[in-house]
Length: 311
Image (tube, one colour):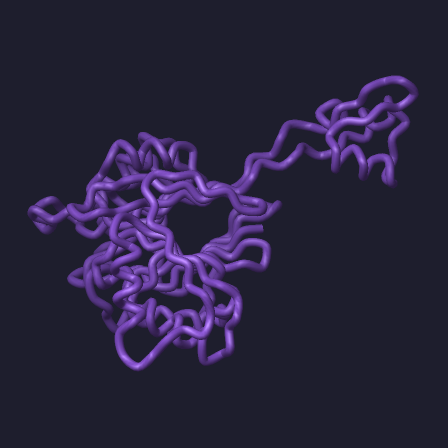
C-alpha cells in the first residue's frame, strides 16, 4: 500500500490557505519526502506524520520555496534524538547548498546527513525505485519517479492442483526461489500464477515548463503531480512554469491515470482555479484533482482512494 500526502500545494510563497511545496510518500513504514518548503515540519505535525520515519529527502531544485524547511526539519530530528542517517538527494550543487545551509547558526546535527548530488539516475531500494529526470526551470532542476516493484501474479488454485501444490513449505520455497522440481518436473512460479501485477508509479515534476522528458518519464503513471502554477500564458509571462492547460495536455499525451495540478500561484483562490481547471482538463478527457494541503491519496489492493488528513 502506498499513501501520498500533499503537505504543501502552493508555490512561491505561503498563504493562509496553503503552504509551499512538500509531498510525502509513505511506503512500508518508511516516509519519503519530495521537496521541503518552509513550514514543512509544522505541516507534518498537523498531519500526524513523524519526521523520524523519513529516510530520504528528494529536492527538485534550490529555489527557497522548495528547500527552506530543511534546517527546521533536521533540527527537530536532532531534538528528538535521531541517530539513523538521513539521505538527501538533489541536482547539481546540492552538496554545496545543503552543507552551507546546515552549517549556519549555532547548530550541528547529531546524526549523519549524507548528501547525494545526482543527474538522471535510477536508484534501487527495497521494494521500489526512484528515478530522476531533468526538467526545464532555468536552474539545475530534477523531477522524480517513485516506482513500486512489480509483484508476482496471484496463485491460481487450478494450476497449483496440476502440480499437487498447496500452501506450505514447498509453496513458500517456490515463492522465494522462483523454481523447484517436483517428481522430476521443473515448476516455475509463472506456471502457477496469473499475470504480474504492476507496481504503483507516482511522478513529481517539480517546477518546470512542459517538457518532453517529463512526458516520457510520466508515461502510464498512476499519478502525475505536475507544475500548473498559472491559469494562462499571459499570467506566466517569461517564467519557467507551466499553465493548467499545458499540464493537462502533457498528462493526456502521456496517458496518465490521474493528474494533480500543483504549485498553484498565490494570486488564485481555490474555487477560481478549480473551475478553470475543470473546463480545461475535462475538454481533454484528463482525470484530475486540485489538491488542497492535507489531501491524501491511497493506492491499495482495492484501487485508489482520496481522503483528508485534517478535517
